[in-house]
Amino acid sequence: MAVIHHTTMQPTKLELIASWLPTRDWYAGREGGPSPEKAGGFRLDDPAGEVGIEFMVVTDGTEEGAAAYLVPMTYRGAPLEGAEHALIGTSEHGVLGTRWIYDGAHDPVLVGELHALLRGNAVAQHQSVDDTPDLTVSVTSPAGDAAGAELVRVVDGTDHTAVVVRTPSAPEELTLRVRRVLRAAEEGGAPGAGRVTAEWRLPDGSTARGPYVTF
Image (cartoon, one colour):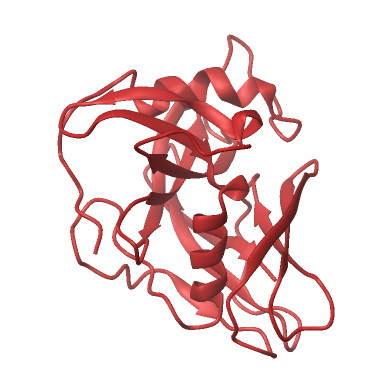
């Protein structure tokens, strides 16, 4: 179980995200520059207890119609070898010291737990409360094998990131699509497909719901 420390981070996660967003192909831009506001998300537990895993939604500003972006992140106590390109930044945590914060789509620990979530072998956790499942997150498990997944490669698109994985018993590679630009949508999808659906807050205080990840 992950322990959530309610303490300071310098710089904050939102400050790091504000600097990082313009470097992404899927970021649409905003007059005056990025102004991310936390708007939702959930966490997953690392069974080894070493890596923090968070799926954070930010809206870019407080204007009506502000874009909502999904930023999956991992928090590590040491650099992840070979993932320099995926580093969002480092921050000084008030309890844990220096944390290396990565775009989680490139982190094998997050990818493994995301695959476990889709297969029904992990539970989405509340973003800010210890040991509390987030019951607003719904998961449709895809048809097929439930074996663990190994990260193969990551490809950014214009509105999503394709995370290609391999499982021990599947003959072909599988693709998890992390939706970077979130859009409200009805529950459901193609028969046999998988998805993680959750909520986020809009600038006017209302709530939207749509897919975070599809498989």
